[in-house]
Image (cartoon, rainbow, N blue to C red; front, side, top):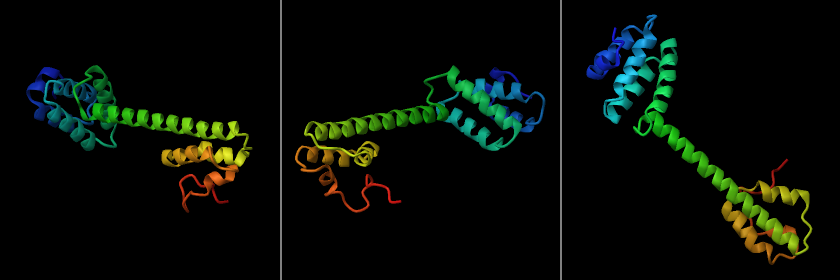
Length: 172
């Protein structure tokens, strides 16, 4: 059993073998902790390999759950190493930020369309308001904003929308 980080760092393959061999041992948490800490001194590529290998090898077992908890904590202890889990977290965070920004831009565009129509004195029904505010297609919203200044009635705003437009009203 390899339960100290120094030995795990010096012999990572043996530390992995130790974890697999003793997966049902009462000492598995100490073994996995040593493996995680020992792998911090490895290259990001080698460390990522160990993380992924252990995750796959122990999947669906109590030891696998322990490994995931340790690795999630480990990522927090050693930020900036570019590990698989850290990269996945950062990519997910970036996607979430981008998605939030896109939704914010769409809401702003929709408000602009409604504001132009209202300033022009055109009556906007609840159905039309819902169609405009629920649309997230920025190209469509920009088109509506351009047209909002010239349409004679609000419904004319949608005349140029192609069949099956992503912002078409739902068919009931």
